[in-house]
Image 1 (cartoon, rainbow, N blue to C red):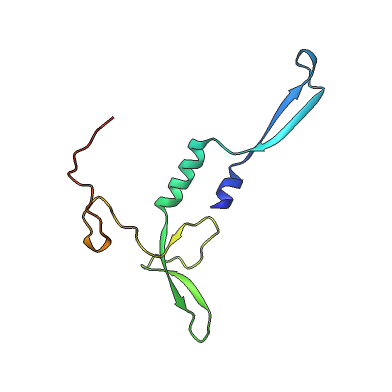
Image 2: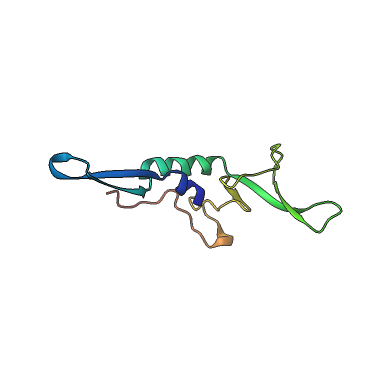
Length: 109
């Protein structure tokens, strides 16, 4: 995800001088706008892959492989991987101590 931030960076410049002349130019690196960075993070979230650590046959090494058959075995630094599904707190989950949020009344502001 760090590459996501660095690839969205742009170079911005500002000219300084009398009456709009560009006798001196100052440039800096700036992050992309929040909307575009957020959109790219959401796209990565939608394409996230659940993985399991499995031992490579005839070796002591381990590899991350998809939990379900997806045909993918290699992942890039930009791929979002996860080990376990996040709980859905909308519904009761007694083992986690969550009462859920479904059918709750509250202040809508």
